[in-house]
Amino acid sequence: MTLTPEHKSSVVISLAAVIVIIYGLQMAKVLLVPFLLAAFLAMITVRPMLWMQQRRVPAVLAALIIVGFMALIIVVAGAILGRSIADFTAALPEYQERLDSMIDGFLVFAVDRLGFDDSVESIGDMINPGWAMGFAATLLNGLKDVLTNVFLIIFTMIFILLEASSITTKVEAAFGKSADSLERPRVFLDNLGRYLGIKTVVSFATGLCAWLLTWSIGLDFPLLWAMLAFLLNYLPTIGSIIAAVPAILLALVQLGPGAAVATLAGFAVINVVIGNVIEPRLMGYGVGISPLVVFIGLLFWGWVFGPVGMLLSVPLTMTLKLGLESDERTRWIAIFLGSERDAKHALASRAAAE
Image (cartoon, rainbow, N blue to C red):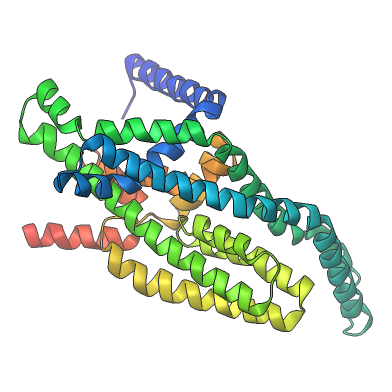
């Protein structure tokens, strides 16, 4: 197929528009990141607010109750974790130095006692396992910096929740009561809210199990590893691996190989039971994302919005996927973004319809 000059111009203009939008998102991230966090929290809490409204609680009071509860959680979590993050960041160079010494000792042993070639030592110079602990510190510090805008997040969340109770009336006034104008946005928001709600509950359970594991082993800063497991559980497949590596390395440095193996085994059990058994039963079909898309989204949103963009990468990508699914013309793109299980389910549904 040969592109006409008009089509070529359209493609160039579209690419230029995408680049301008991405650059604008980067420039406005100081304002956009708190807004995205507020929208993320509002999507999780809108259902409890609507539930209270159905029981004759005024909309303003219901929104204030929800937001007050979330503000309390944020303030308490920030107070507890803030000090731990600062202490861990201060102790990080010492941990990394110990880890480097252990690796150097292992490489010397491999060359002198096991007969490996001297090139093993040069390979060891290229490996920096302490990067994982540094990444954890960067991620948690980035979240702490964003939460300093807690008042902006809370006020934005209040207005979003208040708007949620009147959005149906506004859509009807703007587009009429046609099924197409109301059904697609409703299905999209219901699916997104359901996904975020279930994912938050599952992530909380994952963080609680990680805290029990690291606390029982005697690892330093167990609350940090719980928070990291909670946050990174929003990243399917790779998030659980990223969350486990810093804790395993710290166990190796602090308590020795036995504790590191126990930490590895504990995280493996948590991820298998929660990630492969419990979560799929709760989620059902239609909410998966391809691991490749998860990884690309992690890099892209992290590049655009920084550490917090990494944490929000899957909710943002899931929002895009569910939005594409709501329209027949773009559903094929959502299938490519989704998992193999979702594609098989789509094939089965199509076969049943025929």
